[in-house]
Image 1: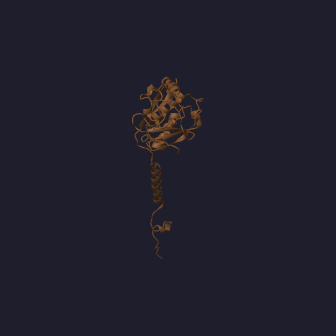
Image 2: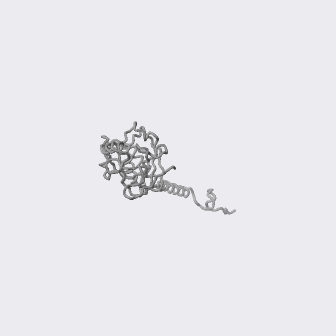
Image 3: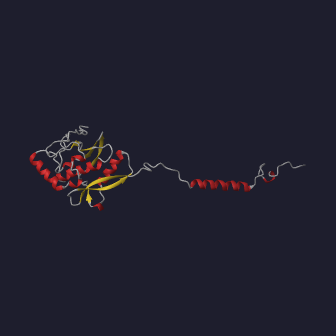
Length: 238
């Protein structure tokens, strides 16, 4: 009787006639393809990838505790809130190798956070901020100047307002300090020095609230800038 099976059927490979070498080639081809794909890492989105770095000045108190100085800081952060967080982190943690310190004694005064209201940044500290036994009044004034000069570099923030335990900061006469910006302090940061601030503090303590005459501590006890421009009132009772 004639054998009608295909040539491959007698060897158990079905009707295709494809032997073991065919499947070995297929397996090797697939293995090479998979290996090649595994070597290509998938692209992951990078937050500010490609963004150009921007330079900001972080203001601090020199080691002699006499005047403010600044150190440049570069970042690619563009989101305003994230940038405020980043600048404050640098402000409170001045690198020791630059020869300066944070003007706020962070070992005694605790930073509690901030809120934004239009162009005003409300910065909140604990009640130790107003304790003159922990740091002198002249240093607190210089701390305000450093905060204003550092944080108003963020687009959309023109003024700073200090709160202590959710209560607006008061001056030595019990008046609200109110909002303040870089223009409320000496035009040149090199002129914001301890001697001038101390002299102005002594004058204010004997003659009442400061007049903002450009010597040392400026007048920040109200919303009148003294130049005809009205300043915002800050957070108020919020």
